[in-house]
Length: 243
Image (cartoon, rainbow, N blue to C red):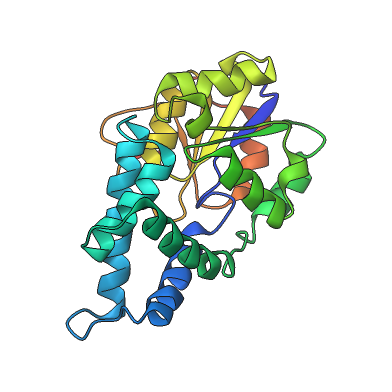
């Protein structure tokens, strides 16, 4: 079966989110005077990431909306009650430091260039369109994608099949003709495979979860491996490279 389109995750797939988040939060902690004597920088950064992951899980499960998860990340991290306006202001100050550290992974532009004429391209993210379109525009990528779909507006998040099927519908293609590339082995890798897409896990070394069991998917360590994979489409009979 021919793969006609590649759908991309954004954070830690195209965009080096982990590095930007750590650098941004480190600068923010210093600017806010929040470095405590009893908690080093690395512990504070780890705590922020754990809180972020927990609140994103609530958002992905549909328990809270996008803005609420941001406010709750701030409240839990600071350990005190804040009004919505106070939480929003604190998060905006963090965003200024975070955005100053934005960058693409070095393998992104070469891969997109190689696939520019042979495949259509789209984005599916568990964020919001406002956030991700701004990010892609700043990074110089937005015009490369036919469509950008995000969980906050779709009302369904990865790894639920509906999220992946929505982007296939937007492209007017059946899932079997679409590849999905993401950095998380469960949310992206298993989710895309179970929705019927060609699933590609780009292992950036940032995922905190591991796949349990078998899934027809492909693991790559650099996007330089992607063109050969989507042109060959070895999904049938290929062993899982997860685990």
